[in-house]
Image 1 (cartoon, one colour):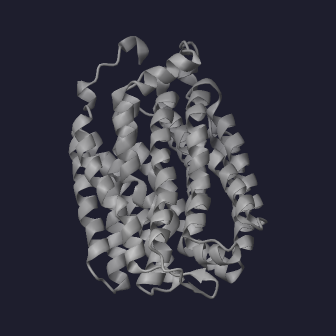
Image 2 (cartoon, one colour; image 1 turned 180 degrees about the vertical axis):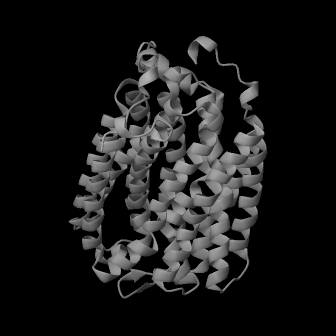
Length: 425
């Protein structure tokens, strides 16, 4: 089917949501380790520190390639960039399925992370080109909702698949799905509306280093990147790495039920992202909802940490609420777009994304190190077993992150306070 045959009213939605499938697929690769953590740790003989390094391989690639990704997206076809990045991701997924040790798995997971460096930035580029500023926060929220379905699929459904087959065959199925998404992107993603193609192509493109400097020294980019990254840590660390292990070893919840509970973080984000985006678009103000997100994230996570729940249903509710309230992070992305000229959209988002993923890259192995720091070296059936205190020592990074997020909002400027020169918009 050609995009020319799609009505112009819905074409922007088709283009952007076809691209968001790439985002969803990358989140499958990020979060699947949580669903198969016990299998991987046993099969590849990994402790918490090793497993933290493996999960960090993905975000390490993000940190290395995010800034180049933004610069590349400012200069080359978004559609071609997405297809190239998807190729790296699918290749890494197939390679991971055949990995026999930590080094091989690390390299293949790193390849998938290269693809991830381009996925969300590509979506932001398309949103900025296809939608007006007044609708961007809502559209970004909906695209994150689509992406979070990938994080949801990576939990209980992927855990069931791995148990029915094994984790290697589940990854092979995962790779085949990636090939299908490449076909959809090839068919439906278009760089920009034809009516503005000439005007956009005529805009001057700044040289490499001046572009980076302008984006890096825009305080709004840095503050929004830090806020988003800190609020994103539960999804990146609990949702992607330790959630299932925490629930199975501390609260004795079976793996499939534990992975379902963890998937509620993604489910909460699915509902929370468009909610926060819609409210901030409708009110015309970003900061109030960012404040509320930080405050309620601290409250909800404190309940998870300190209140001795035993009911699976209670954990389902709390993990859902955690995903919902931390999705206030979505507001940071349109703020960055609004704070920079269009010619620097990719570069400015890239600078912020480097900050966001650097925090995750540090937090994932750091949490594993903190778990091993006081670990009693208990191993049962080849699998390391951790106590409540081990997890609480590692999870202490989250309350600190939410408190810092609250104070960072004080530095944020509302869109009406910004002054982007008209010649640069």
